[in-house]
Each structure stands twice: as structure tokens, then as C-alpha cells.
Length: 304
Image (tube, rainbow, N blue to C red; front, side, top):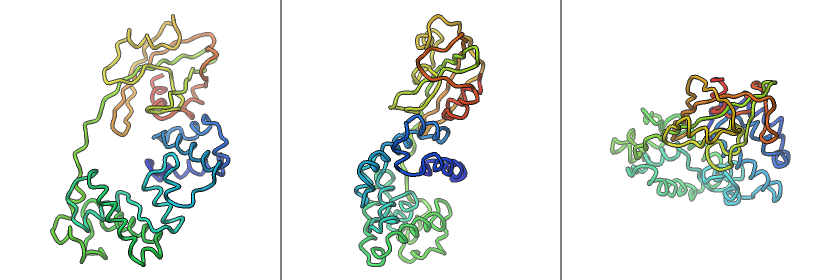
């Protein structure tokens, strides 16, 4: 959960998650819909899908014994695998996170920009593990390196006077430490547009569908709608994606805006009522939907 979400947001959700899924076996045995509901609002939903798949793999084959085994699980990247290897398993590996990249780039004055410099930074970081003290306490070294970057070798105004490696820092010797690591300028954000359909029955229940596994909000519940694309939808185009034919659709005022990592989504919503919802899809009251839908879809509810 903490890979992309703040500690303040995660703390109560993590406690609730453990109550519902107390061990890896319970998580592996859970239906995807249960996990999706519990993850709603935390964002980056591919993490939840990978977590579910990894739990199933562990339940079937046991916990991996080294970082290479962890790296083979769904959703476990090089950093997470190395962190588990060093801190939990005592393996002489050095995890490369943003803090470590910054420390290493300054220590060795690596001026090539990220992300192309990442392989070299990883090689230099891993070289620390050849030292006897590091091999003796790899977990402590990894966490000390994290803390050095987080509290002393900070992104702006590094406290070089407090740094235990100041005498050996090539970046400081050249006077360029504050400008490192260099980064390639970010690409422009992509705009996406969509139209969604709010269908309610006479009891006020809302029609929901599960989104395709691949893509944004994959596998999560949401209002049926158009695909999300770069150009806005005309009313006629959008109605071609309506979940039920022949209804009288009423546009609701306002636009729901939601930001993903590299994309900005703009959504409109149109509404219609039916006596009874179809026997496909899922249904929920507005209150239930507000608790179980991802944040982007909750913003559509606000327009209703």
C-alpha cells in the first residue's frame, strides 16, 4: 500500500485490511471482488491485482527464500525484492530507491540523467555489499542508506556538513551535489475524456459493471461508459456505448476530473431511470457505491 500512497491514508486502511485478510492464505482464498472493494480509494489498482496473484502463488508454493524468488512474484520489482532480501532475509543486496539513487549519484558525481543512469547507480550501490561490515548487517545498512537520503542527503538543500560521507563525496568536491541526480524533463501529461451512464431503478439502486482487467482501474467496479480517449465524445458517439437501448438520458451538469500518474481524465455523466435493473452487472445503493468504488468513480457520484 505504501508504494504509492501516504502513511496517513494507509494506516487505518492497513489495519482494516488485516482484519479482513489476516494472513496470506485468507488473501489467496478471497474473491477478487472482495479485494477490489477493500482497495477502493487507494489508487494504482494494479497493485491489488498483483498482490492477489502473489498471495495465490505463495499459498501454493510457500514464501520465497531469497530476493530472486521474491522478484519472480507478480508485482514485486527489483527494489521491493532487494528490500525484502536485505531487511527480512539478511541477504547482501542493496535496494535502490529514490533516496539511494540520490546518495549514490552525489557520492560518485554521476551526471548522466535518470532514468538512463539507473543501471550504473544500481551497480555502484550493489558494490557496497562487497564490504565486510555491510555483508554482516545488510538490513541495517539498507535502512541507514534510506535514512541518510531522507534526512541528510535531501533533494533540496542537502545538509552536507552533517554527512558522514562528506569527505568522500565527489559531488560535494565538485560543488554540484545539489543538482544531482539529473533527470530527463517529464513528458507532457495526456488528456483523456469519457462519458458514463448512471442507471438507477425505482429503489434507487445503481447499475455497476466491472472494468476490464487490463488498463486504468482494471478489474474495479464502476459506472458503465465509453472508453477513455484523447478527444472528447459527442453525445451521439457516447450514446453508442449506452448500456441499455432506448432510454431517455439526461445529462447531469458538471465535469468530474481525476488525475492519474501521467494522464488527466475528464468525465461527463448522463442519467436514466428504469423500473428494474438488468440481471447482468452489479447493483448498489448510492451509499454502498460511495464506499466500494474507486476515487475516480466516486467523483461521478458527486455529479448525481
